[in-house]
Length: 366
Image (cartoon, rainbow, N blue to C red; front, side, top):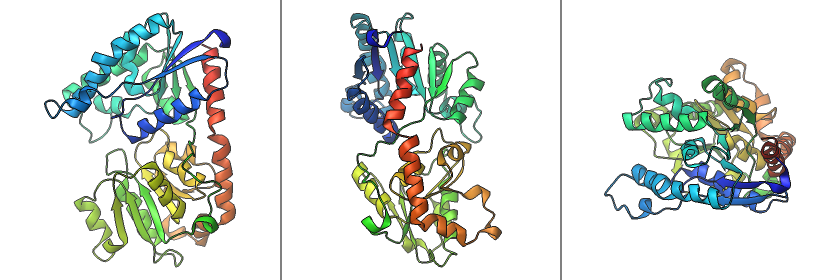
């Protein structure tokens, strides 16, 4: 496919798809709209209509489905037809069912962040139960993925899962990029004035491991450099088990913040000692990269994906036996040199330009 003749449609996520996917859609739209490649690009996403006016008559989830499949999907069909679109690129595997509304003559690409919802619907995630409507919906997504021409996995770990679940689907790894418009770089201690807290950015959810993230903070308190540190959690309220884990004595040092905007979150990144991100299931690991782009080190663990993304400058908590932890750990977290190395590493590996170059090659090679 020649670049100059290619007409591409980028399909973003619905506004109620969650903060991460909304941010990914926004970042992609900005990046593609400022592109320099000789392509005709169109960026579209479902509008909030039913989900805005449902007024409690139906659940939020089903009103989003109406936006996506009653309004946007037919629009997508006619847009592809009349604009003579040659490639449709869907930015989230959760929207792979759009394949059924796009002509088979049109190439269909899906960015796959993870397969956890599909695997959960097939009872392959321990202790996670999916209701029958959810199973049917994930089956529809699976059928759309099977009919895609290419899956762009955001990590090698995700690609392995895609190959195992969809052996006939062509795949390619294209790492996410860091959209650092809200991150003041270079972001180092002397510029922002580090405050005495560690930062956790996650909800209490089966995919995350906020409990062990809290355990990691409590272990860090054993070091004299961190013994007076507090903990800020950006996410939902603490549950009973988490409150018991923290203990009555430490609870005044823990703050939970919800519904922050990007600028506010960036401000907490800027001034923390370090970030803690221990998780059960991840397709990528954006908090690690966002920590590094702010000149902060991340203590990570749990998901294999995080080891792939973290590079050499962050700390894998799972590989550190408590009895063998030394002051080298505190040096890694606090060292301006290590922070700078981590910053340089992600600036290069996860740059927007690297991402776009890889995407354009994928389009051309279809």
